Image (cartoon, rainbow, N blue to C red; front, side, top):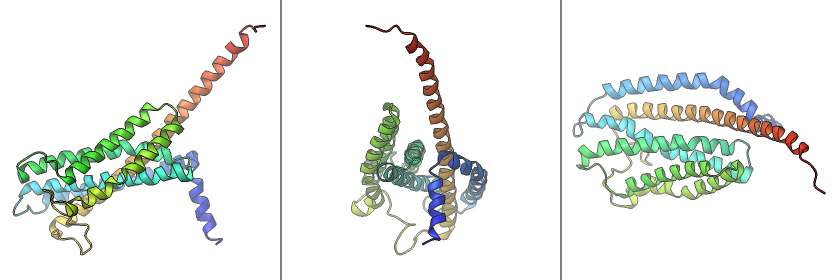
Length: 261
């Protein structure tokens, strides 16, 4: 029991924004270096791997599209955990985490939709179809945009954080729909070929570049998320200092006002 106290204290210490910023400053250079290295290796493998016997070189879109789709869903789940931290545990950095993650998740989702459309044209003969997988991912993109708009529309930070957290948790229901839509409905989108209970069905020639690119995307997300959280903390500190300065400037004016009988 005593061994758990230092770990709990370490996690609780990260609730302090100053300690969190110090940690980010130490690990961020390593995160950036690892991300760049993974992208270099992943892109080299992607461009030097064999072409598919049916899709030809078009299959290389997979190395951009599939990790983007995975990260679009993973980012939303990170936001859902942060939303619980806002509503249940009231962690000081939880609302910072889900607010900072929303634009990143929207970017990944847009990239997944764009590359999916580019991939779908030569494979399906059309840029877009309203099947279950594509529609549910498009709804995810709209959810991201709605969360971003809500955060910007509400001026009070605490109220915006609570409303955003509720909206995020409501939208979680869409994640399993995206994942299992190809199994529940008859769609043009191919079924899962990597994350399966019986193991991947994709050839290792394509699996290894895809795995490295997925890892690169994952490190890129956490790197950008840490930077965005750091920027949000700084933004809030600047806003707080401006409010204090404004209140101090108004105080002498209030004292000079004549009293009414």
